[in-house]
Amino acid sequence: MAFTIVTQGTFTQPSTAANQIIPLPSGVDYFKTYNLTQLATTQSTGRNVIGEWFGGGLTATADGISWVKANSANTMTASTFAALSATGFTYVNRFPAPQAALTGTTITNANPAVASVTNTYSNGDTVVIYNAVGMQQISGMTFTISSVSGSGFTLTGLNASGFSAGATSFQVRRVSQFTPVEPSFLYVTNVTQASQGQVTVSQANSVYLGQKLEFTIPGSFGMVQLNNYYLGQNLPVVVTAIVDAYNFTINVNTTNFTAFAFPASSGSPTTQLFATCAPAGQSTQYNPITGVQTGYNFTNIPFHNGQFIPYMYIPSGAQNPGGSANDVIAWQAFKMETGTINAPVPS
Image 1 (cartoon, rainbow, N blue to C red):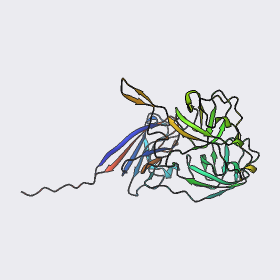
Image 2: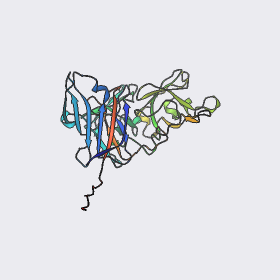
Image 3: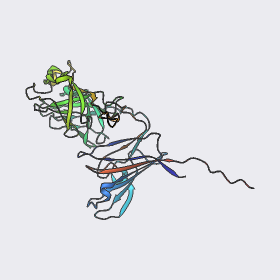
Image 4: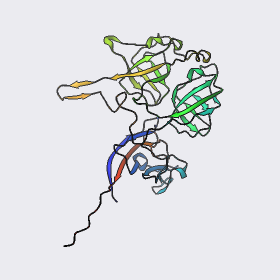
């Protein structure tokens, strides 16, 4: 039977490559990616340039067919992502349930903090850390993890070098990356004292340039001057620049604000409070000459439901279908034609 393209598009990986979510309007039977950047190169290490996923249970979770450009050549070989120790496609057509809890051994008081726990997580997964003995000030926080191995992962959005000690045990669950409104709020892990304060959050790729934010910072964290902060003419805090996946600057001079710092672990069990920021909207402008309204993007937070079902999850990485930093990826989704062909009627 023939296949018909139901939707297609492209995305460009940022300087810090991120896993991608491709919403699919009505489900798919076949999905394909092309790494347009790497198709034009001859990498000495070999790179995935074409990925294929087949529906109907033919492709296992986190797998698919990987077409790899051979080392320093334009010839290609085909294998499964799993056989290459790479991660392929995951087709999601139901709400993902939280994974069972894992018990870890340590979280370092370093920049960034590193957690040790036997796991099967992937880069870009969202986890909740809790029952962190010796580091209760982060217990209950949500993190985007990176540098994942079978024995641990990095909490890239957490600078714990100022903590008096690391955690000696903790529990962790992997959860859905998206909440019903994406996101309902973000955990703030640092705010600098600068002419344009730089904010660090625990989850990656969660804010957009020009987005308006409202901060809620308990007194035990410092930087309380950001609470309900409004500039002249009731203008709220606005994101002025994206520094990287976890850091952004705001249009507030925080130089003379109280320094931000996590409270001690000993104070956290009875005062389980976190510093957070929440979406407060985005600016919109209307041009009466062209009749075009700009700046109000319903595909960006906080204006869309984060759980588009079904969707294709495309992991980033040199050998994965999502590609590496600055790679341009084209993708196509297909449906199988199921109509019948009528036999000719005898005359």
